[in-house]
Length: 355
Ligand SMILES: [Zn+2]
Image 1 (tube, rainbow, N blue to C red):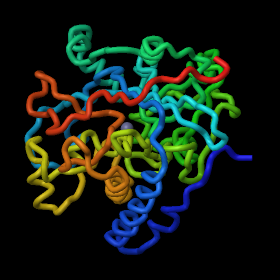
Image 2 (image 1 turned 180 degrees about the vertical axis):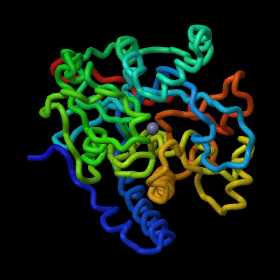
Image 3 (image 1 turned 120 degrees about the vertical axis):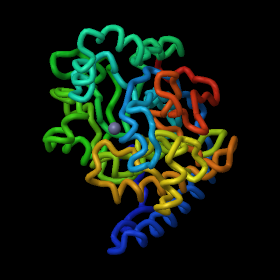
Image 4 (image 1 turned 90 degrees about the horizontal axis):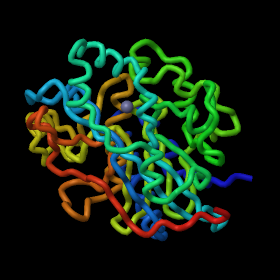
């Protein structure tokens, strides 16, 4: 018996031979899913909190754009805590993007960045890595205990190390009851990466995680009232988006784009973004550190912004909540997005049953 309900909206929507036909087929399906989700109830609790800000190459953040940005920009990693009722009416607590950033520094990209700072490493780190909170400190602030957590999910596994959370690689599990929800494609690809992908995955990040802690997904699913996981391949092979019905509409989370500007580039004040979108006729700008699924990523970003709909606070931008959002920083001038989502908070945390 499955606790998850399969969603069929996007079945066959990427089959057309002509890429622009795929864009329109996916857009239509996304509109249908949006209507259906909005007809239900919002989740009782949704909160996002900053964990850490890390440097990231601007050339990847706004792929192909014409502007002359500083070589690096800041990405702000957030933890999302979501409570919802499952299909049996039970309250469940889901962590979206719980990055164990203290244990991800072996990711080759970050390791090389560290080494390139050489003697300035400590100073450089103090300047460009802004540590604001850990997953455990944020949960403690909310009054949640590790045993309260039912599910973890990441829109993709770049840089992630889940072994402390779920057990594996010599660690005992910190979250005794949590299961990881992950697309099968992402889980499999992370275990046998071709060389340029391996720069972004943490070595041993999923090693030895017990099988019964992982729920491999082959389809889009509705976890319960107001929470869907929708495949949105592109940024990685098995990327998915987390869609949550909140009192402020449908919030869609992934890392296909680094800011709302990336999803509405014509309205962007980030140098070169709007100009590129105008010249190319591009609806979206990819977050492209690995680009082998670029066509799919373009389609997925249209899919995401259609599900999300317009942002209630600024209708020029879609209602997304990127898992790694570009954030302005004095050292990286002119990289601040035109519209920043920031931390979000809706509803009151419920005490999990049995806690
Ligand atoms: Zn990534």
